Image 1 (cartoon, rainbow, N blue to C red):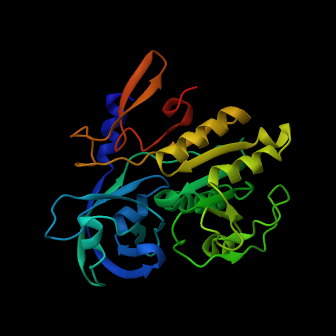
Image 2 (cartoon, rainbow, N blue to C red):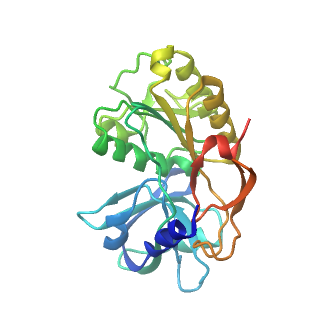
Length: 296
């Protein structure tokens, strides 16, 4: 990425004092946080994240991917799991509290007109970007036929419901869906190793493999994989893309200190045209071409 492009991306980051509008505790130690942040809500795109001060006692910010954004109403939503000092503090914040936000940070997913059957794969903390992207595709590419596959090894942060949206190429006994997507008319299916009813019993990438294997060559030519989740899941998603000859875009999750490219604490090695390249997940990503992240 050239210096001008990086400057343009950094220049788009806003600093906002966001008001907590709603804060809901969900199954599996998870929380849904809605923040009034009109500037960020206006500019946010799928795959981007915010760098959030979880409370005045903890000045070091934490990165959180975006689940949804409503530009008209001026709010954003974050789905997170209580896992450490920052998220434990954040879980205590009540409606009316002001929290400092930097965002939106990073690049975003880029759906294409030619790939009209997007396959979205989210695992664990990688679920929010896929929900955001599904909403964007529905709004911006109504002719596309997206399918969202979500996996979790803890309770899902919603009550799964049997899907009314038929998927001829899907395993017939896998019927559990995410209500938010179902109500939007976006087909989704769930995977877990926890024997949840209606879910695929196994990793979400194994469910994706079943779906891809059922497509003919013409249908595969319309597929692009978009994924976010743990490293092993992303590696498996990139391997699927290679096996079935489809492109992939992966959103990486890394520990971050500054979140704006200064500390280089989130650097990863990618395959470039002239050899290995070091890229910062925060400002060079977090979305990268899957073949660069996991080259054959």
